[in-house]
Length: 285
Image 1 (cartoon, rainbow, N blue to C red):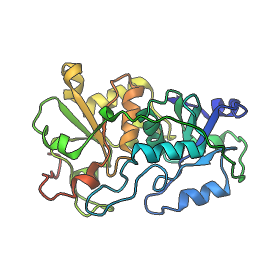
Image 2 (cartoon, rainbow, N blue to C red; image 1 turned 120 degrees about the vertical axis):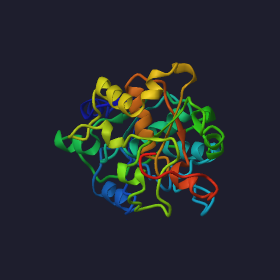
Image 3 (cartoon, helix red, strand yellow; image 1 turned 90 degrees about the vertical axis):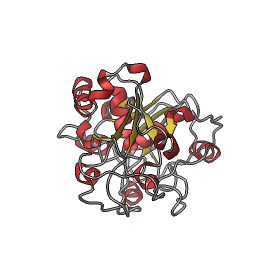
């Protein structure tokens, strides 16, 4: 689930290795690609959050980063040359905020060997490892895709279970956005009623690397006392954020902590608010 820059360096010559550069900036959608073009890990392919890891937005119907359908995702993987037995490493420069989305999307189709580079691009540069601006050529592969939709929930699923005691929702946005004090991106502020706030940045140390498994467990336990203390099997932990991206970082953190893999509300807050009949909460409620 996690790998290091050093391990990635040692695998650069592996013919079954596929590296993805997932750098992105929500407020500057072209920034990640431009930085990739200036320099990246040798043979890394650029995975664009908007173009590759999301379906087109339908205004007023979807969230900001809806998941692509299985046929489109299959075509993307095949265009990149990913095979079911490929070793995949994803990195970004934001503590895994975007690389974890690619990690989750590969888990969604049952891909086994996929990891996020701990520390990402910054760790690679700090180690003085090679950088190139060469854009790799890809060879089309065959990847039979079958998405596991038991890993996701919809707004309707949540709405029908909001008062269910064993439903635990984890919001990966910052506390001010969660409380509705600020909302720099979406037109409505607040959070889904009953959700707990666990900013994805809580999963990282001061150097932008993931905390230890024990620290992750403690952090999640403090955010989700009901989830930790209730009878595991029936507890459903659902992760969401603004648009289903940084929520994947919380899913990765929970998995690293040894917890059952949480579900993803892929549409997240930006999808939830497309229907004004859905309830919202402000403050810490």
